[in-house]
Image (cartoon, rainbow, N blue to C red):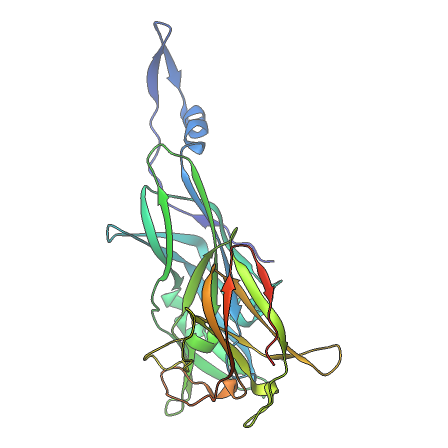
Length: 304
């Protein structure tokens, strides 16, 4: 696992004195740091991805420079790496590929409500998408919406938060045939790492159109939702997952990862590879079911 070092600029800490037993004691910088260590808000952030719809994409490479947090006051706070790092987002699309962005990074006082990825604009020309045919395409980087989260850093109160970000490339990556290039508009969700859950299972749907090798499972927030594709209008999937061929036997399976507790609607499409963000497609959803998930729960739900 690659680990990045991060930094935030901080002003120099002054020395100060306080009374003890009628005398004066002086607290140096090291002593002050020791006190502050117990009275700070800290955040740890990890990043994972979900694969794009096109199975022929083998690399999605870009330079990440940090994160921007949104506060309820309307302000923002940015934490950045000492230097931006080039990352292949495809490498983060399995359970062992989660990338540690920041560990116990300090944040200022406030109520935090959102977070988004920051890319290195100075190295934007180095971003690209590669395919199994050996073709390399330019990758444009667009600003995505912040992922919702909720935590508070209070003055003189110690706190420690940990979140996992999931970047869904199926929802984020689009191709422009006229310009022959891709655009990445990050669609993120943030889940408390200590509470995230998972839904997984086998898929045995009979496909009228397409095959399960081209299929995907879509997850929608709330029960009894009528499934729809990724088109920027109406109902949008909360999470997606490709359908994989089992290495044991000839079966198929899926795994929806990094989920918060809640009530959901799941559905299968045999033509998930055809879903293009911002374009309306009829994905012929099948096996539509409701599922409830608690914190820190792994549910096995087969989709016949």
